[in-house]
Image (cartoon, rainbow, N blue to C red):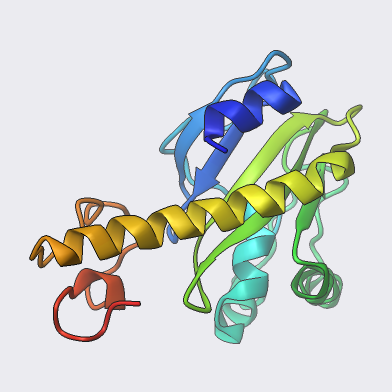
Length: 191
């Protein structure tokens, strides 16, 4: 299922987020949220569904560093207590999806799922909609779509490597840092 298909099915914009926690792609739906984060903008880890996915599926030091840096309040629903954030992140890790309900912007909710390749988080897929929409009903489809994105990513890597490539065509993607195993085709490090 493509980003467009997910957006059409839900009627809500869908976006992916890379390691820098910047929106890399976005598809607007029938019920787009006014003021939603534009492509290229960075989002706070502690106040967004995609950010919480990163905190849950990255190295524990990312959560520690985020808490130590201070948790900025964006709305009255923003989690600004480190213990509460750690508990929310543990829940995300356990259930496999993250939610944000008016934590960054009033009237906006989101659900995010990890894109995991070879046991490693490479990004997130999220549905953002009005706070009046119960996004839980999209969780199962979102998780399935994230798995398809991961398989598609591996397909591109394998095809590029089979063609003798030494770098991914996606190498400018910020979720691929120098030294990532997928950035070293033909040397036995790619999945």
